[in-house]
Length: 328
Image 1 (tube, rainbow, N blue to C red):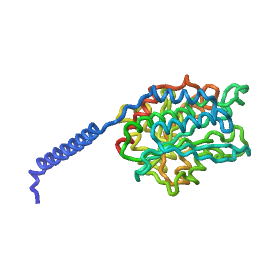
Image 2: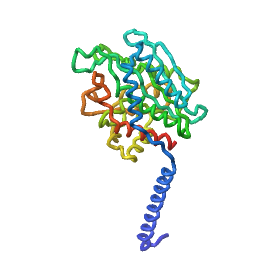
Image 3: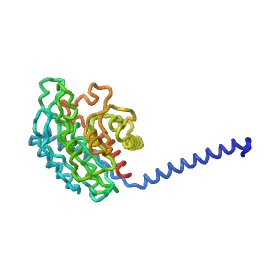
Image 4: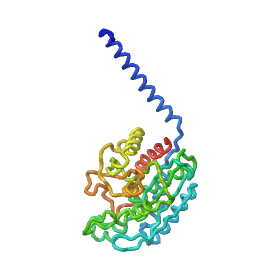
């Protein structure tokens, strides 16, 4: 039994040893991070990928712009070394319209057993139903931020993977028909009228028995000063992945983008990836608690154009993902 007069000295020694251990652990972690080689994400390149999609016009299913953009996306993934699969499907919209849709899938290092899923939707909204001007509401949305931004970030990551592959397999899925959901004035709750492409893929994966360790969905990731809160469907299904991504963003100095607070629960493609396929998937999506919609003022309006694409935001999102992926 220890004599009481020795206890303060022993406690002090224990504290010193613990501090030394924690310091050594931090140094080891920092040293390991320094030894890793991270490719440099180019916001300029991502911006161009977004610009090229928007140049086709609104990517609404059953349109020429949609077909031309699909061909472009497949060609780019192949150019960067991916094994590409075009998953065509005729999907029925809420109003009975038959949509000729295609999910575009690019697999990198397809023989690797450990896989990470990265996804975004590439279609754009058929109607500007949130536009303040009634005469604009029948127009299709250009979809620079809402659709093209996530795809642009992923194409830049695909370019980098083609030059410097990470140790894990990567599957990129550009989901179609995400934004063909029932308009704002629909009389009934039609939640499942959205995200038709991801619902189809989750029920019919491109490979039988496909599994991934986790997934990350990007949606509206390029607006000036965008904030990404911890989305609640993501927190429910994959809290550890949310923590991984937000912690890395904060470590890199992007905490003012990746806000460490609860956001809303958003019906998005990740809901069906989680619910149907069982792959834990999170959503990095712009959230503005001060706005009526929760998104930017240009959301589902004629103003979702290249003027609302910011390279600093692209850099924050893309760099965070690169560090998460290359640490696996």
